[in-house]
Each structure stands twice: as C-alpha cells, then as structure tokens.
Length: 78
Image 1 (cartoon, rainbow, N blue to C red):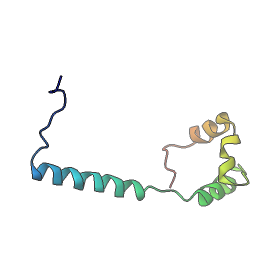
Image 2 (cartoon, one colour; image 1 turned 90 degrees about the vertical axis):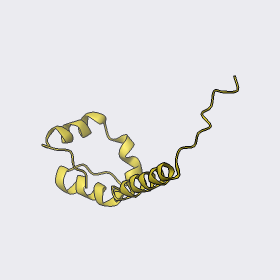
Image 3 (spheres, one colour; image 1 turned 135 degrees about the horizontal axis):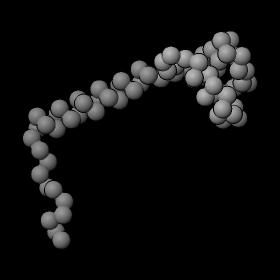
C-alpha cells in the first residue's frame, strides 16, 4: 500500500503556473467583495427592506428575498 500517493510533483513550470493561477483566483475573489453596509442601504432605499445591521439579514424571510430577486432581470449585487 506504499504506492497510493503520487510522489511526482510535476514540472517547475507547471507548479509556477499553478501558483499564478491560484493567486489570480484569490485576487479576483477579493475584487468581488461587497460592502455590507452599502448593500444594506441599497436594500432599504430601493426595495423598502430595512434591516438595522447586516448581521440581522438572517432574520429576513427567504420568501421576501426571493421576491426581490424575481423582480430583477439579472442578478448583480455590486
């Protein structure tokens, strides 16, 4: 059972490419970050959904959020 793990690490170019790919994905995810306070204000102003702070969003009924999403052509939160 000693041969279960693949001990071949791959080429240096492959490892370098993998690192750049991971770095790019992580950097891209950071650019998708949403300011929770701005999102909360937008919900209040545009949709009449007032929530005292973003931590209380879990108290909003899922049906209400679904109704807001169905009124949109595309889902863009930013």
